[in-house]
Amino acid sequence: MDDFDLGQRLRQVRSEHKLSQRELARRAGVTNGTISLIEKNQNSPSVSMLRKILEGIPMDLSDFFATEAHPNDKVFFKPDELRELSTSKNLSFLQVGDAKRYNLQILCETYEPGADTGKTMLRHNSTEGGIVISGCVELTVGDQKRVLRKGESYLFDSTVPHRFHNTSNEPCEVISACTPPYI
Amino acid sequence: MDDFDLGQRLRQVRSEHKLSQRELARRAGVTNGTISLIEKNQNSPSVSMLRKILEGIPMDLSDFFATEAHPNDKVFFKPDELRELSTSKNLSFLQVGDAKRYNLQILCETYEPGADTGKTMLRHNSTEGGIVISGCVELTVGDQKRVLRKGESYLFDSTVPHRFHNTSNEPCEVISACTPPYI
DNA sequence: GTAGCACGTTTATTTTTTTAAACAAGAGGC
DNA sequence: GCCTCTTGTTTAAAAAAATAAACGTGCTAC
Image (cartoon, rainbow over all chains, first blue to last red; front, top):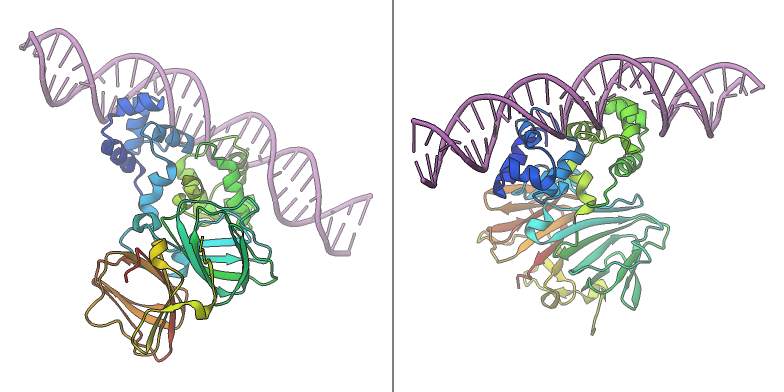
């Protein structure tokens, strides 16, 4: 991330999509000069400008930046090298490595008391399973519901609506796996 | 990605890290007004400005943008309902549910002191990953070798020869996942 | 060879963002 | 009440980026 060369990266993705500066500029609705200056790192685009340009490719920002943060042939991970996927604060989903690349998403999930993946049940086109490491969590899968305790586990088809809810007053840790990755 | 609200997202991550605008500004080396304006979407930061701000959190760009991207049904299992796959006695592989059916093999692995998957390294046509729950184990993947301790994790392509070896004098527990199942 | 065309680059002007500093609102302390 | 500290917000001046249009280069057709 530190020595990320934005200009070079843009040039790379543009070139991979076989677009000239002018053609990309036309598709993105910007001027070709802008793209030239950015690729030469002679100016530093705003996020909205970069997004606009990437829409002409098209590519999204997270993919644009994805190469740098999580080097791909990395095998071993320390706890602080896991990537946080959750946005809510009483719930943490830490992902091991580049799940997309390996088609296997391993998560260290922490549910604080009250944490809930939501009444609007989750659904995605994967299968998932996991094991409770500590605490307990109420898991609903379709019409089945159960409180899982330490050492208990689950495995199901994620197209079935499901929900995790920590109804206890202790945090709960779960190690889960999902294939293909659901994000 | 389309309706991504950059200001709101910055406010969210700043708030999750319990930083005031001023404190984040100080850490990032920018002015607090800048952060205020960005969070209110009253201006559109350059990528380098956003990166600078995120370094004060710290968080990297790909994580910042990551949120947007992208029947006879036994679901729950008690510990004693897991199936033992290992035949060796200082090594236990407990499988969650019908791995083949779901194309996802989740194992609770226990390596007693000295336990070793063998000098004849393992190879199978899958990807696998896992997290160390307790103890430590030496993992070799191709030409990389490392002792993984509690909380550390791994993810790799299982066609690369690999080996688990508990070189310590304490048992080691690992939760692992593999797709497709290797047995 | 030279006319036409597509390419990336550069430059003067306009537009936008950053800064620095002031402002307003709320929470304690005394 | 009043003072002080911290919070987020706003504003004029300074800095930086986007535009539009020109420039230079290399290629192909004729």
